[in-house]
Length: 160
Image (cartoon, rainbow, N blue to C red; front, side):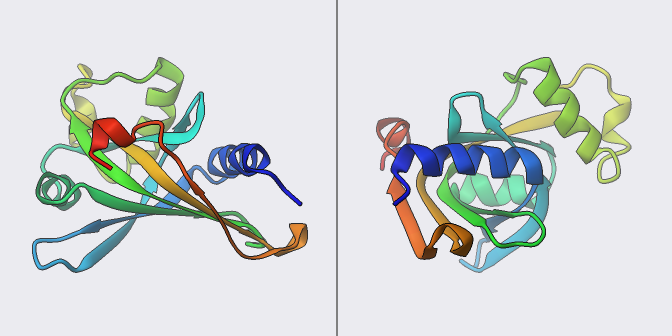
């Protein structure tokens, strides 16, 4: 049987390999809104995800009203999936290492070409998702129903 540390390690590997996940926020009508987003897990694991957004986007507005987020990652042949739930916040200034910033900015170029002309990095917001629940499904490892881990690394900070 797989233990929690193995699940965390597998989640980190999957997030790194997939890089693009589905991020869901909640709009002003409490309806879910999903979009593809580049994301990089913190070097300590999938407890924290970093992503970028132009400052004037619906996702940023959603997060200001309701910080709840859900992320979903998978890679072909999609025999393993990771769902992460947590709370996210927008930061005004970048706090991510340069390689993480560069990878995220490359992903964002097609969506925010006009913003990327500002070399100062301040046209973007860094979105930090602090994860409180991780669910893994991996039939090839015998996990056909979700292996759920409650993460408490940021629970106090996020009011969980």
